[in-house]
Image (tube, rainbow, N blue to C red; front, side):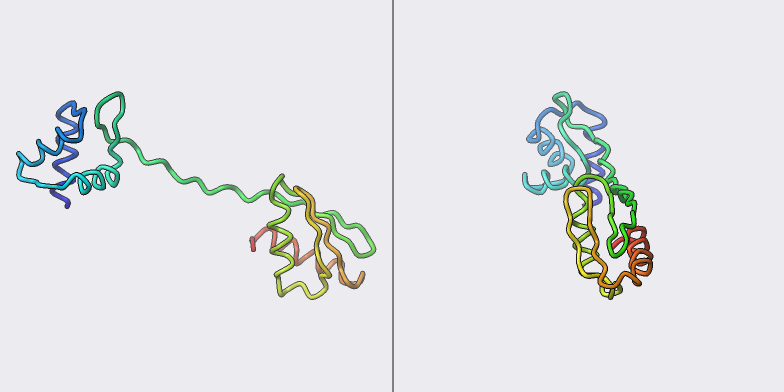
Length: 141
């Protein structure tokens, strides 16, 4: 396949190829005999697309990892924490907290769009649960 890929890239850089069937004929004339489906798969793998009416190699889009949203924690004594995060993230954070085995003092969570209420069973565990929540929100679930 390497030779076929090299031939494809050479042909599209040397000529203005506007039709896949023309490219296939040129490849066959050069000793390569890819089927139409094979040629389509190779073009996709090589990031070759039709741009302005001709086949060209385009840069593959770079996948960007989204940044973890910041979470602020507010104590609401005697036994509540309020977490504020970016819109749309509260429910996933709350679910992760509810499933976390390292939070024995956690009674449960209630999540909206950007706010989570965390209930702590025993007020004396409030700071311990807060520390665990801080670890989890900086490390991730």
